[in-house]
Length: 341
Image (cartoon, rainbow, N blue to C red; front, top):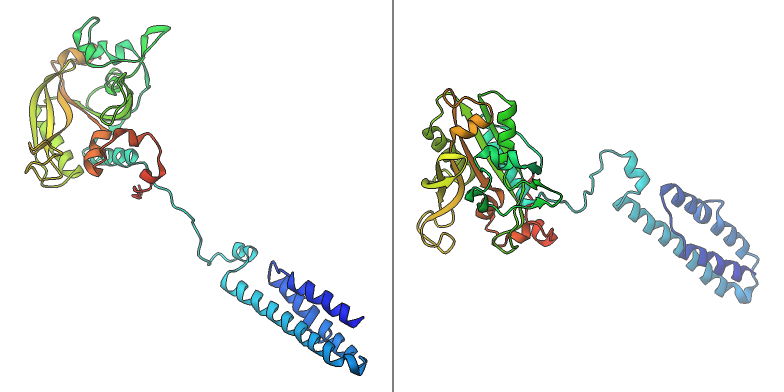
């Protein structure tokens, strides 16, 4: 019966979903074309008995309207959002990049430190994280049983006590001096390990950048000006520095370097413990014994070295109070750092 056929066609139209414009055009031709379903049905309507004409006529009009509505809805959809097949072929359409990632704050600061020293002619060198005693201690003026070894609580390899996880990137300095003739101007970024209790202020692994400059007639004044330049470039042009006498086995004389607090401008606040100064690195002139250990004549050459914790610098730049946040990979924390390389 014509009534049953109309109901079947209506159900087909209601479930129709076009995947592209070609399928939609086939739908239009099938239902609304000159030789389509609707034309056939209206021709058949002429033979419908009089008592059924009103009911069948209403059903035909509803079917035609539903077909036209479905066609219009799909047209609007394709015009507002092109199908995937069209997008592939149209290279002028905008791209949806989705959620944009971010660089880790340690990586951002590490790169910034490298960029600053590269402007002074320093290149980058790297070395192994599993190191032998000579490169990690002995060549740097840490003799066996020397109390200075207690300054760093070391992770030793149980089967071979001569092998350990490096406690500083100074071991890379030794390797560079052993294999390179002066002048040497390098920085050494990398991860280091110390057997410390994990807390908001300490971790068993962290990151350092150390630097080394060896040449003829290198002086402490060269060291001071290099570090002053770094501080002003890293923090602000108004940053001041001060050097305080200290002790490191591999430098003589040695110093700790403070910068004027970048939060209060040196006026004194809780962050700098109301002193106006914040310690950021250790430095000094390379001990002549270290030069000799590495095959460099200390009567001809002199040099300076410095080392800083990247986490420490990152704390100063971003005011991150808990060191553990750098290694926990919490997306809520990391997504705050959107700077691009």
